Image (cartoon, rainbow, N blue to C red):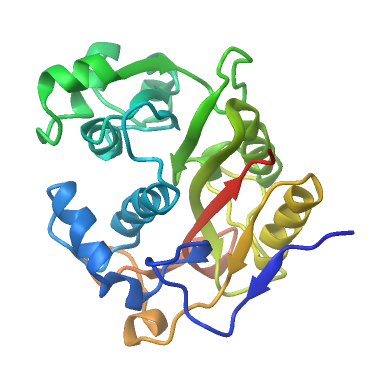
Length: 279
């Protein structure tokens, strides 16, 4: 039986990204500044911004930001990522839960399918004509991925898979997303990670949290199926890696946060997963 390669002895880097946790040192790397500039954002110590940077850096390291590459995004909301991808020549299908469900669940307000696509380039990151040519939009429920979505070079989701109702649904989505890829393609997902306990977590709720045991278990299944995953669960050694934000959450110093769920406090942070589909 194969098992995933796991390390927690050295800090992860953006220069050589694997499946890893957000840490302070990654914000201090040149790659972080570069991608913030590409997204037209000011760098800040915030885990959600890190998730965008992580996804773009993984794509760069896998040579997937170029003309002729096809990408599929899940739960895209108003992310700047499709515009950056299109700027580099990628053809992108951006998907989101249908607008009626999104309104019912409070994810969006006063949006239409047309405005959803417009939002993805509202910063002018990509030339408007290029964006219209390369980026399209489709309603997709992440719990029910259509079988017609196939042969993409990469797929991604940014902190959305933990909102599918349960850990079981979240894991099923990750596995199912690989079916959308060509052999050798890359799946890049970010999600919530329980940094305080490998025992208690939230398994069924509007937001769930992966424990170390859940992540390793998932990665072992993937590796045994022939896919490639390397995992670094080092939590970081910087000052901000030991600081826990609490409500009302800050716009900086927000790498780890205290969350009150089901009568228990837990420390949450962001986990990035990159899975290379078997050839």
